Image (cartoon, rainbow, N blue to C red; front, side):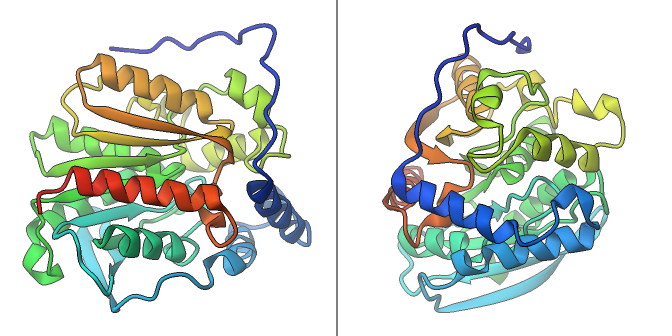
Length: 328
């Protein structure tokens, strides 16, 4: 079933105020980023270095792992580095492959190191972070295909990783959530039923930027801006045809036959409407889907877990969902 691009509803609903702790995170991120040039005015290497610097304070602290281990994973496009996180207490025998966000261009397993440690500790599950090749070094569909191949590798190498690979979950935030859906669709179409579930954190699921939530929250004072969304797509897509490819514009895809999905939706987020539409489409296609909208949350709010009760709540909700959909 294909979703038609909806027109903007007039009048646009009023904006909601950010949760105070999330607002503190957003303002701090803005202040730190303001010390540097805007990402679209500097080189890609500089933009990535700025993203790493701005996120350093939010990566610090948090759960300590029993160990981490890195592997080089072969894919159809060459080797990809992954990092496995082993919590001190293992409650679940499976594995959660996590795809970091960053607009297809920025972000890394280092910027999302704490996010992955939080999941590992709270759910008691091994988490594998993927350092896929970012745009514009690699454009669509290569990074998504690398992620799909990593999932295949994890499924085939449970013994090496020390996990029950038959209980394989995939998830990610923002661009990583988009890749999670694209990779899940590729595996479904190849009749490779290796996934136990999909976790989608405030994902960018559509190339339609004429949504109410983009108009409400894309001005830049809620974190993610419309300008950033346009720049990210310009880096990621090689042609206009890519923008409407259903492996990227997920709301154009046939969504039947997918594993259970858990959607973490930020209320004050330009991609809020993408996620609401995705939940409806997944449900109407016959899939099991659970969703929670976090009132007052902004895009990337999980990274604020050191100061945000709302982020902690979202981590605990996801840990609970993973336990519910695991076989122990």
